[in-house]
Length: 378
Image 1: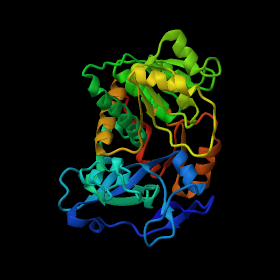
Image 2: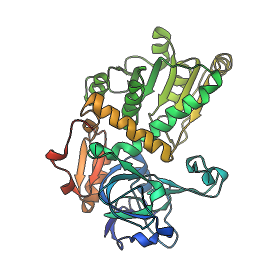
Image 3: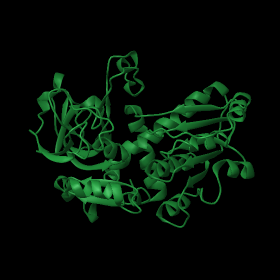
């Protein structure tokens, strides 16, 4: 079978490789599931791996199949798989267990191991291939009504985990009912965070650099949220004029804005950081004031990365609710399809240079999607 892979440590090494089609018996205890891949989203992580910034090949291979935002259909299940059947639409989780206590109890996204295993990212092959096989434990069923947008489930889990963790932390307050939220960044994660907050009835202001109107700002306003360009006003200045935020979800990939966000939190507020940033940016900040406000205001800042099965399942539920409430809103995020694994060069060119792209994805098996299969409701 065909797959898109890189040679870790070698810049711009993305290429097409041939691999044996996986077999259901590769997974122990009759728990194997073979999945035919339909769509795979690509993002900054894939770009950074191809740029040799991180990533490692599985033991015994000198290449890494990339792609961690997979969506497919079950082709075969092992004899001890009862929760899935042939024809089910599915998404697989990304991180696999290590050895820490957190891995043992199923929260491998919280591992304390120095070495971690992530499909398509580190030491495990990903989903940009015609097929993959995995244990049913790591494969989540997607409702049929979400088959056109199921490729968005993995990005959605980033949001699910961050917001869930914020609520979990604030159980310390016994009563915490956030009314106002800010989302920093209007890309895929920022848009999905805006959606999740609105599904919970929270007033949302989403900040982005680009002045409106454009597709992203339209999508935000279609949810009943407000869009504000930081070209016109900074996040702290907006908070001074309109009041602080009970929860802020940062999804910009630009680390200095974290310190702006810290100054825009209301008392008892939570700042969720989801950006994985590299580089060595140095800025000047009002450290004493930020520290004082955090201490006296009982404020919290928490980072979130990866997600376990729980967040895939809750993400699917929120996506189903979104289709019911907002129709084709999720479908409008799928802006830039590229058909066929063999077009990997165009896939990366689109990911790097496409103007106005929200979600770039590879249509691995385009024949599975047609106009008749695009329901407006679940």
